[in-house]
Amino acid sequence: MAAQGMAILHTEDHERQNDAHINRMLTILGMGTLFALGLIAAALIWRDATHMNNPNETPSQIVVVAATLVWGSTLIFFWSMKLTPLFSYRRYLREIRQGLFREAEGVLVRFDRETTFRDGISFYAMIINTGERGDPEDERLLYWDVRLKRPEVDAGAMVRVKAHGNDIIGFEQWS
Image (cartoon, rainbow, N blue to C red; front, top):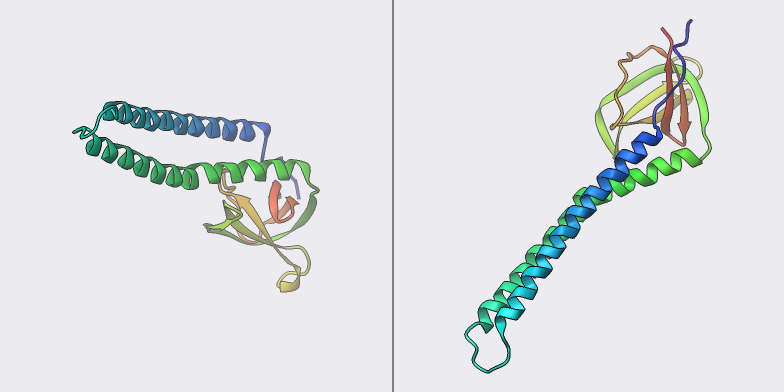
């Protein structure tokens, strides 16, 4: 059996791209915050609280409350839907670079096409059998990062993986 060579899946380029994406999202968030603060400041200046019975009092309050509510809800949505997954992926990339790893070799039992969500990151589940074929005691559940190109490998193929915990960080298939 000829081996193609162990392909290391995550590179420093992945970290740079993720960090650049985080910086873009934080820039957008910062610009939105400045816009909301500018709108609130303009409404407070327009209010002109220097005299009683100002006709601008109520509209100014409505603008301030509306801007605060809209920006607050946008901030919560943006942070949870855009930034939290990026921060989770950053942590994941740092952990797999620094931690211990092990290599396992065996027969591919299953490589799911549906994603699974774990620790804030999406993965494809992969099961390999490292012992006697058909023995469920020898099956290992591993996770393939969805952001990486999924290899075209069929059940029954001989594979060797380098794993950090259950996360695949290196992959090799024999023909």
